[in-house]
Length: 249
Length: 310
Ligand SMILES: Cc1cc2nc3c(=O)[nH]c(=O)nc-3n(C[C@H](O)[C@H](O)[C@H](O)COP(=O)(O)OP(=O)(O)OC[C@H]3O[C@@H](n4cnc5c(N)ncnc54)[C@H](O)[C@@H]3O)c2cc1C
Ligand SMILES: Cc1cc2nc3c(=O)[nH]c(=O)nc-3n(C[C@H](O)[C@H](O)[C@H](O)COP(=O)(O)OP(=O)(O)OC[C@H]3O[C@@H](n4cnc5c(N)ncnc54)[C@H](O)[C@@H]3O)c2cc1C
Image (cartoon, rainbow over all chains, first blue to last red; front, side):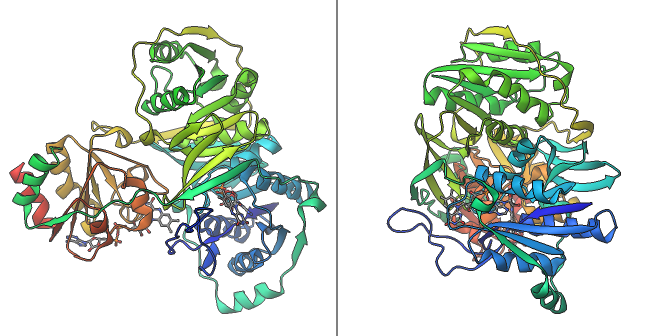
């Protein structure tokens, strides 16, 4: 079976973004971009399933600007077999991404799509669930353990009170949580190999998908700044502050 | 205009997050209805009907909803959606599973994790781990939103007089089956609802030390216990303790961070706490940049002293 892994190019998690002075967005010019960490975990999981011979092929797909090719090469260096870029400069919102991905699923007929649970830029946490709904498939979000046997995936999920295990009928959608695995480092030979792997490019129009945004960002603001307070000398001073100044204990 | 709140519940009662969502719905304006999709969930529906501001409760009671699986829940929401301009769910593991499915089935965008209602079309939501707040306006006829609980006060559990109306339940989707759950049992307050949280990081060194050092402090303060991702990854505590961008978002009156450095992903989950205390041996740890009261020192000495003095 084929596994499709959507990967997103985002501002690297170590970068602290700044809001633009004109409040139109955050300044991402000249900042380091990387693969969304949850997507890396998704690629790793898919590659492991292929290494266990559960899957036969892993296809990475990204939607966005031309530079997403780097992200796709990175996915192929981890071990994806080939890649698809849906190239557009339009601001893509999750519903549009889900529709684009559905078109790719219709073409490639994977049995499993593994996505990140959220992208660390927009923190939307939507795309996988939307894709599942558009396809009429089951979903297992926030996965911390995945086992595939025959036509069923048994997935342990991280939920608010602890963990939950569900069995989903394939084809299905899985979204990854942080503890699913630790992605391997791409080795130099694998980075070189990845450069030669197949990368196909489509436009949203080729797929017949309307990606017009439904949401308009009116403005982006700096959150209220929290002032650092004082350092206290010792435990007695701390207790005094908490009792008499902050009055929280 | 009418708002539909997707209740999170355990059949017998409402989960606290539902009350925050009802407040957000009230802020939007118009009638507030609550959908309880459950099995033998009459008690949860009756509780919802009592909540201030709720004018009607729709109860879809069926075995298909026994395990609160998102495929059936989303189908249930869509079945009753026609009457509503806004569909709201908590930004919890449950709400995040259901709401995007609903949005996609209705061909609408979803606005995730709102922290403020500007008007019926316009909302504020954090992006980039809370380092920026985006004000977004939806051009869709129906708005599907998830609500960050800590940003809205809980609606009162009494004062409402909503009618409970039974609606036809959808059939089980058959797409997924509940296998098992391992829910952490605790006598302590729930992390997202606690007034005081004692939270530990990698500085604790091990699970034994985490419990040995922090439990007495949490006991004294009747506090919930939290952790950084590093502490969870190292196996000190289960995953549901994690506070942060990809864990729980909390805003207690008092947050005590012990042996936590203060990475932006951690701060994203706790920087709206009223008072923050940091105990860390590194005077340059970023956590001191947000702490109201910082104590530089060895946590293994400071915390027991604190416990003794309280
Ligand atoms: C204010 C704002 C400004 C924006 N500016 C830009 C911009 O300048 N340029 C731009 O290209 N986009 C821009 N976007 C779109 C945005 O980057 C996302 O593509 C879109 O909003 C999806 O949201 P998410 O990634 O948070 O979804 P989530 O649902 O959190 O993502 C979950 C998972 O879905 C998959 N996924 C999501 N997006 C993609 C993708 N594009 N390709 C492949 N897989 C994906 C990944 O597996 C990811 O882990 C902007 C959005 C907003 C709200
Ligand atoms: C995509 C992504 C998502 C993430 N999401 C989250 C999240 O949701 N929540 C989260 O917390 N993290 C998250 N992280 C991880 C985050 O970046 C940090 O790695 C993590 O928060 C560090 O945890 P820590 O502060 O416990 O550990 P460290 O950074 O190792 O800090 C330990 C601290 O303990 C102090 N210390 C050590 N010994 C003592 C002692 N004896 N006495 C006093 N102080 C002592 C040290 O000075 C140090 O400051 C995420 C990372 C990524 C990439």
